[in-house]
Length: 332
Image (tube, rainbow, N blue to C red; front, side, top):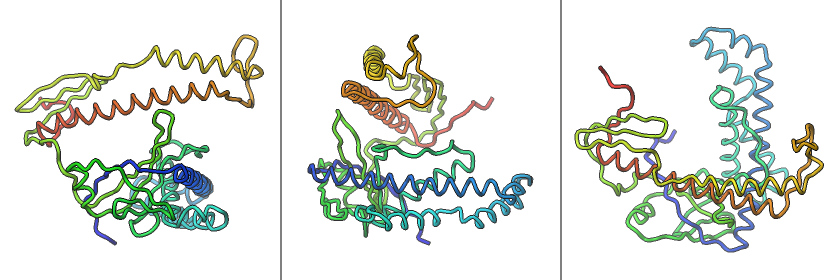
C-alpha cells in the first residue's frame, strides 16, 4: 500500500477544437452509461442484501464489534464492495462500443463513484442515489498519470486527443506545473450558453501560499446569515457574501416566461382551472423554453461563482488572523 502524500488541485482551461469538444461530449456520455450501469448493479445487490436473513439478524444486534462483524460477513457474502462494481463496469465497457471511447482507468473511477454513492446511502448518510440523465455527467477522471487521461508537457492526452492548457504564467501556476501530477480530471462547464472544458491536475505536494497566515487563535461564531471572528489582533462581524444581490426580479421574469411557454406548447397536460393533470404526461419543450432555461442557468452560475469568490475572500481574511480556528459556544 502506497503512503499517502499531500495533494492540491490546479485548474486550467483547455484549448479545444470543435472536433475535440464533440469527442469529449461522446466520452462523457459513455461515462454516464457506465455510471448508471454500475449504480443499478450496486443498488440491486444492496436491496438483495437488505432482504437477507443475515442482514436482519445483524440489524437486531446491539451496536458493537459483534454487530460490525455480522454486517461485514453479509457484505462479503454478497460481494458488496468496490471491486464488484469494477468488474461489472469493465464487462459492460468491453461488451459494447463504450470500449472505443473509455479505457479501464476512467471506467473504474466512474464505477467507484457510483459505488461510493450507494455505500453512503447504505449507511444512511444520504438519500437513494439517482440515475443520471443525458448530459448531466460533467466530469471524468483517471487513476494515474501513466495511462488514460495524462498530462505531459503542457498537454492533456486522452486516447488520441491532444489539448493544450491555457496558462497565465504567474508564480502560483508555475509552481503547480513544476510539481508531480498524480492524476487528471476533465470537467465541462456551461458559461454563457457555451461548453467550456477544463482540466484539474491533482498535484503532489503543497500549494504556494499567496495570502499571509497569522499565528493567533481565532474564535468563530457562525449565524444563519452573519459570521463573527475574534482574535487578539482583530474582530469582525459581517454578513455572508455582502457583494451578492439576489436578482429576484430577473429570475421572476424568466420563470414566468418559461411557465407561459410550457403551458402554450403542452395544453393537454393542464386542467381547465390551470392545474397540472395527474398521471403520466409527456412534455414538449419549445426553443423559447430552452432559451429561457439557458438564461436562468447563466444567472445561477454567476451567483454561484460570486458566492465562491466571496467565501474564499472571507476565508483568507480569517486566516490572516490565525490558522487555529475554534468554533462553538464560549466557555463560561
